[in-house]
Length: 380
Image (cartoon, rainbow, N blue to C red; front, side, top):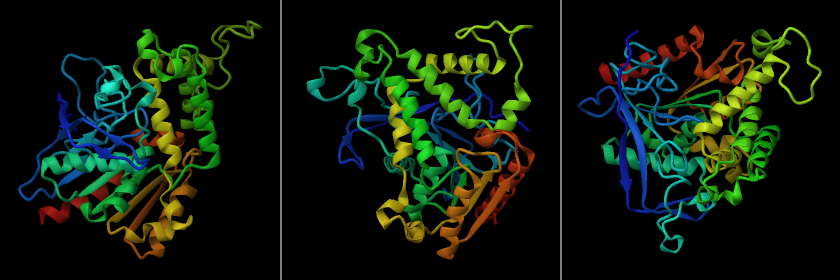
């Protein structure tokens, strides 16, 4: 399959404030986005791809002059790939509050009282619904009134579900992978421990660490290590690392790295702390916690999905214990109860939650077949 080759991010500025679910507003903001493929004459072949926690608008392709710059879903999106850019016009948008170009905590607060300082901890709390509304504004500017599909995995899958409820006539298909209708108490607990690691780092300075010229790297490293453990399955960690030691013999140290899995997690944490923003991590994990479309319907997920009009494709993975198949089946049941058109695939894969990012042939075959059918709607 061919590569998209080099791609170029674009920027879109919005002077009109974005009303947020909290009651606050995001004023004078910019969103970064990328597009792949061509929009057809009647603008019916557009697919929005929603990103997860540490991803961005850079879904596919590469950046000129940068090594290892493939988009985070490059194995899925491109010419001849399951989401085929020879047929679809694919859009990736970096959500506000992120740290990959769209307006976020590290950007200047336009409030005159802020004196040009970065938002830091004063950046407004974002929800999945706020992100969806921001994405809708980009599509308005692109002249796209209805999407062929919205696709997302994990937190991106929550955004796809929210699209089907918040803007039900603006998408024909909702494809939600490795996601859930809300976070379990255990998931919220993992997020809280990760957040505590960040806010208790002496370099956090209440979220205004930019003014001090420091980064709460220690907290970010621990947060990433905690998160990364939850993305992998026990079987995949055992197969990759087991109890392998870094050295030939035990060192009998309580602080040095002894096992290969320790080395791996520290490497992941170190790498993450070099490119991710601490305030963004707090914002995004809180948006995960807040997502719960059934909450406004007395906890009844069936009532929540009564507004949906799209056709649905749900995919889960057997070893994903963070967003288990049972959570996807809750969504399927709610859709069936509403007599909506829904397909469901449960993939037997060993990789845990991260499976949605990997090139599993059964998983990709499911999405290829589904998008082949979506394409028939505008190519007939």
